[in-house]
Structure formats: C-alpha cells, structure tokens
Length: 254
Image (cartoon, rainbow, N blue to C red; front, side):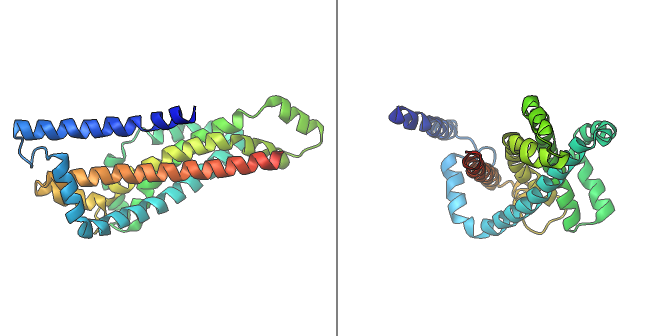
C-alpha cells in the first residue's frame, strides 16, 4: 500500500515533465519565435543566468506577500469572530462583505493610488482585500458547524458564552479556518504582484512589466513560474502548520 501511494505521488511530476517535453518539441518543430512563445529550455536558461537580478524582485514579493497575508488573515479572523458573536452586526454587514468581493482589485488599484499615494499602504490594502474574505467565510462556516449536542451539554454544565467559544467552537472550527487560510496563502502572492503594479520599485510585478514591455517573453514565463512556486510553498507551509496544530489539539483532547 505504501509503495502504491508513493507511485501515485509521482504521477503529477510525470505529467508535468511530459507537458514540458511536448511544449519543447512543438516550439522547436514549428520554429516559433522566442518573443512569441519560448521553449521551456530557453525559460530555464534565463531563470538560471538571470537569477542574480531576479532574486531581488523575488525576495521583495515574498516579503510583501507574507506581510499582507498576515494582516489579511488577522483581519479575516477578527471579522469572523465579531460577526459570529454579534448576530445583529452580521445581519447588517454581511451583504457588504459579499459586495466587497465583486469589485475587481485591478480596477480598485488606481483609486487606492489616488487616495493613499504610492507607498506601502495601498499595497497592503490590495493584499488584505484578497486575503481576508476566504478566512472570514471559512471561519464563520466552521463556527456554525459546531455540534449542537456538545453546545447543549456544555451549557448544561454551566459553561459561559466565552468558555463555549474558546473551548468548543473555535477548536472545532480549526479545519475550516485552515481551509480559508490555505486559499488566502495562494491569493496573497497574486495580490502582492497586483499591488506591485501600483508603483513599486522592485517585485515580480515590476519585473513582469519591464519584461513584457521589452518583449522578453522568457522572463515573463520565469516570473509566472516563480509566482506558482511561491504559491505552492505558501500552501505547503500552511498545510504543515495545520497538521502540527490539529495533531496537538488531538493529543490535548486525549
């Protein structure tokens, strides 16, 4: 069984390698210009030779993404707790929460520059808007899915509303909360790149802008693959943290 699981784990890698192989063959056989569609080997060569200059932009985006992600998750959790514990606030604010996600961030970005300038604040607002919503919705759903029988039992035992939340509702909502955090982790990189279009001096978004304006399509693909890699790393880190916390909670319960 263990060997079968390990074998299945290699399937996505095999499919990905096959995809790159077919891509390479088509570009070479069709003689497609590099500015239109570079071959994977060309992209890899550019990623290696140009890593020195690209690493500055990479680190800038990672720092921006992590900072915005932390702020977005914090605000998302705070909003979820507030809306859950205060039903009258939830009834008044929840529709506006939904409407906030119907405004394209790329359209809102120029307004943020007009209102707040080209500093760090508009960039944090963009990433926060992208990150907080999945956490808020997932946390709210997790709180609502707490077992009614357990809540009734704790109330019968004399538990206060605060004890009910911290001892029962919050621990049982952790899987749902982490589902929202994992989504936000992947969105944070996209939000960071979009925010860098607001006038940043460095970052993958800036790198992509320069590359596309000079028809360096190979560098654009380097940036795209870097964004995908960072998103996967963020996601993997949250999955690891989730396993640690859930395992710790399970041991504590036993």
